Length: 250
Image 1 (cartoon, rainbow, N blue to C red):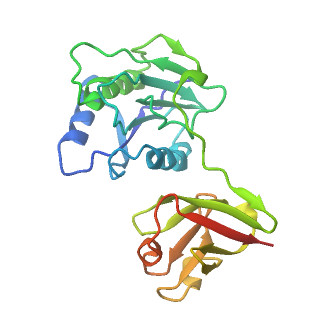
Image 2: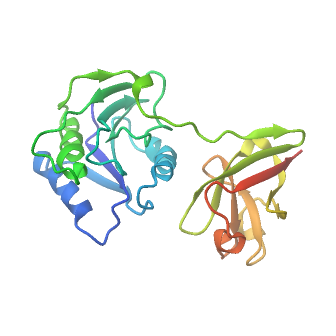
């Protein structure tokens, strides 16, 4: 598989500091023609699971051969590995901390990226991951040792439980609109959802809800989302990632 020349970048670095620019600069020093596309740098600091979900929602929207660089790395500088992966037609460069859990298939090939002695213990994004992604974009590999997929750090997507005519799940991600994405798949054909004894009717789109009314819609993520027309569902419900959600199905 040939690299597409596109490198996406996902991190919890924010935009107030120089970190994002430094990583991009290191990439461009190696491949000045690389196309670097930001996914987001607004992941909550150290929130590996949210980063894994965001990556899972958009990685396949890019051309085959795209390199996805992910740096959400609370364990930077410790014994966790730096890895590169090839899976499902895409390349991934990231710390081995579970952030690739939702994108690696059973046929994935994983490589260990060696840590150079000169690398800062606080900025592997610049000193290790950026050069590895840049080399990959040129068709080069800065690593050779393979790691079995089973040897990588991974966590499972939260599993829903079915009890009679109900499906019990949880909120897995909250976007900046305050929309609460649940783990309940849209195929469940829910009539309504419930959080903390608050019934939430299912509607076809945001506009079918009254202004400030909490409703559920079948989200583009493939899961039911709890939203408010021109409002913030998280604020109104005081919900958070992990909050239990019950769906009543037909």
